[in-house]
Image (tube, rainbow, N blue to C red):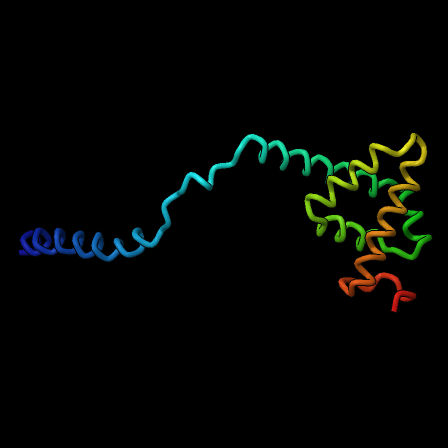
Length: 133
């Protein structure tokens, strides 16, 4: 008796489950050709990641952190700000680091960070410098 009932119910249960899952499958968008990542985009993303890493390494140096503290800026605020930079800003900052003469990179980087923090403070995005208000 149970085997007969299982033979009748099993195909019906399978059919209901398949039909019930069709709306979920139909709602998944198909992948388009526009979703493909070009080689240039992949290289650009890796370049931005390496630039961001280089900036973070520079900011992690002890002498840079001391200078930031002397300027009244907490290193954690700077790290958060660098993480919030757009890809273009990261590339621009990394290019400025490359163009600076040897020995001036720390001062130049600190100045760049100071200017970025000052601009975002003026725009009201942060509250780092009390003299801006």
